[in-house]
Amino acid sequence: MKKVITYGTFDLFHIGHLNILRRAKALGDYLVVAVSTDEFNLIKGKVCTYPYEQRAEILKAITYVDKVIPENNWEQKISDIKNNEIDIFVMGDDWKGKFDFLKENCEVVYLPRTEGISTTEIKNQIRE
Ligand code: C2G
Image (cartoon, rainbow, N blue to C red; front, side, top):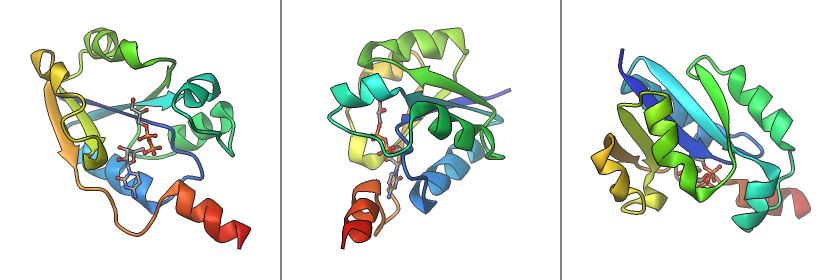
């Protein structure tokens, strides 16, 4: 069984999130999604609209997603990969190169982002 992992905030869930989850799952048989906790998001400089519990529940309801774990810090990826026996790490290509250090532990794949949508844009449109 080929296992895939991806990380993110997934706030105000949108088609760009769904696209990367679908494509990540298509690379293997089992997809783990590590969702940034509210505390970690503050470290990332993000304030979430949906709290962690809701973001995690939404992800658990998605057919492509097999397991949801919390992302508490930048340092947990190698242990996550080992503990979950991950074969492929996937991120959108806005992160291209940033996680190449994981190549000693698993395959690293950066997928093109979905154009024209982002949580920030959604927030701006709602404000207008
Ligand atoms: N994404 C995408 N297309 C978009 C928006 C997002 O493909 N239009 C992808 C991102 O590239 C990322 C995933 O969806 O792979 C989740 O995006 P965010 O919730 O913005 O995650 P981010 O804040 O980048 O957190 O340790 C890694 C971080 O937790 C990543």
